[in-house]
Each structure stands twice: as structure tokens, then as C-alpha cells.
Length: 143
Image (cartoon, rainbow, N blue to C red; front, side, top):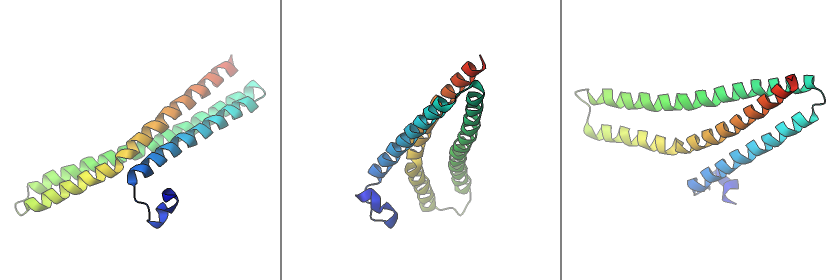
């Protein structure tokens, strides 16, 4: 029941929220997998199969670009923040307490986003399966 109240702020366990998020990512990808199988089952001639496979590959290219770009941007942001902490350390009036606070904030942000990596790899695994299905259908529709 707690996951229904998350938007209101009544949710207490962030760990179970992340687990529910991972389960949702798997279920969403399994539903998409069923949709892909149904789509290729619906194709009645090689031309439709080629069109469906091409459209699926275009979708996968866009989706994989966006997720990889987002993950790369997040990692670049953390690397840049770490570099700024190193630069600020060289300033003469920079206090040690501020450095510890900055490093703690960066560590906390990394801890909060570590679950995004798991979801990224879940989606990447399913996208690989979708690519294999699209290529398989495309090759056998051409032959």
C-alpha cells in the first residue's frame, strides 16, 4: 500500500521503492516483448515484416541513444562536480568543513542515483533482445 502513497510523501522505504521500480522496468519490457512478438506475428508478407523490423530498429536506436545519453550526462555531472571540489580545495580561503560537506553531498547524490544504473542495464538487456528479434525477422524476410 505504501508505494501508492509515494507521490504524497508518505513512503518510508526507499529500498523497496527501487525494487518496485526495477520490477516495473522488467514488466514494462516484458509487455513490450509480447507486443513485438505480436507485431511480427501479425505481419502477413515479407514487406510488412521488413517495415515492422525497420520501424522497431529506428525506435530502438532512438531509445538507446536517449538512455545512454542520459546515463553519460549523469556520470559527467558527477565527474565535473568532483573536479570542482578538487579546484575549490586549491583556493586559499576554502575551509576544510566545506570540503567535507561538498564531498558528502556528492556521495549522497551518487548513492541516490546508483539504482539508475541497474535500471539502465535492465533496459539495455531487453533492447539487445529486441535488436536480435528485429534483425532475425529482417534477415529472414529478405531471404
